[in-house]
Length: 320
Image 1 (cartoon, rainbow, N blue to C red):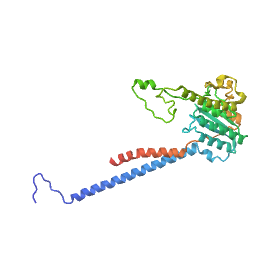
Image 2: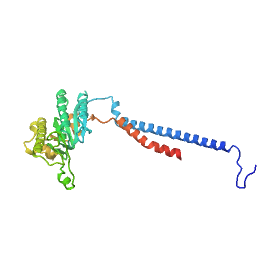
Image 3: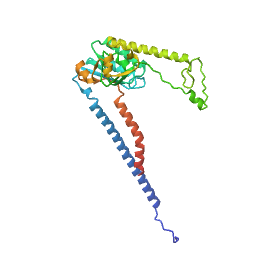
Image 4: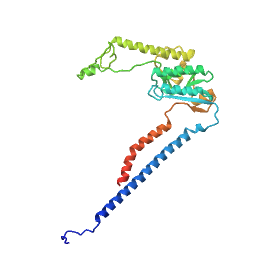
């Protein structure tokens, strides 16, 4: 056989050798992928067990406490009081029932830091406090205000036997409000035509793109006045003759802790620790606040983190 000057003779079997090299490379890549997969699985398990360890160390040690004994039950009401927030009535009421029903509860503290919220949610909590006070007459319940206890927050606090606050706390806002905007002149200047079709003469009342109607405004004011009256009745029921005869008390204004004490909205100045130690006489505090499950939150965070990062890390590992 003759070859041209530029041709290089090829050794027999080169195709098989090339295929073997490719196959070996594929096997190496598969082994590398498995190693990375095992690594990330072990890393994930380590992450989960680390979180569980921290949980039982920081939050779960009370589960192992066999000494028991009287304690002060603490329930935090923080943020907006609303069905979609942490301070929703169902969770707060569940915490209250658990605290009152415990044989070792010497007293209960509602630690409130809230600007208010739904009058319905606050009313539900207030009613339940009164019911539980009647059912468990030997267990006192106190409200302790931290930074802010306004509107619906105070609606809840009024059901407590006594209210404590810091001298710099903000207290009050006993009133009702409804917010809206009016864009009638704005859409005229922009040349926008408002089209609204309703069934019912007042179905579109308070529409921000339509002029106000006096009779509809009066109707809403009547609603707010009725809710305000309910609020006032709740405060008077809870505070009784401790309230000073001052017309500004129910005007919607807020006061400092010291001013609120002078008006009878607050009984004494003091913190949750002070009340547990000096008033309830049980300085061991157990937190009964309903919180979302720690392990579920940790696993959810872990799952989303792995789902987001693992494919990218795996791709980098196998393509190098």
